[in-house]
Length: 89
Image (cartoon, rainbow, N blue to C red; front, side, top):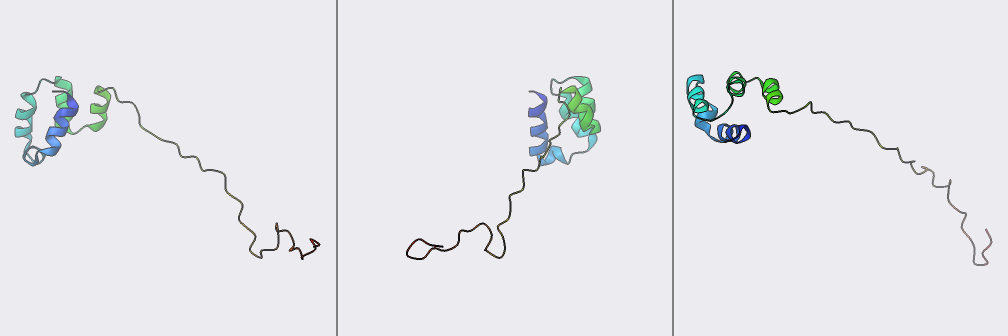
């Protein structure tokens, strides 16, 4: 069982999720995981656990798009004048 599977098991089992530290130690000792990973899990050191699993920094960049021009409020600008039946403005 890999680390992700163990974390899923701990998160989905209410008995393990809220268990005392000694019970978690016993449950993790039964799994075939590295001692340093087990120590990070027991201490709740998320940064160390991510590092041991090879996860890099996670970030995202949000770039605003170009603003669209708003339509004129008075309705006169940008419109062609109405034509009469002869096509004359």
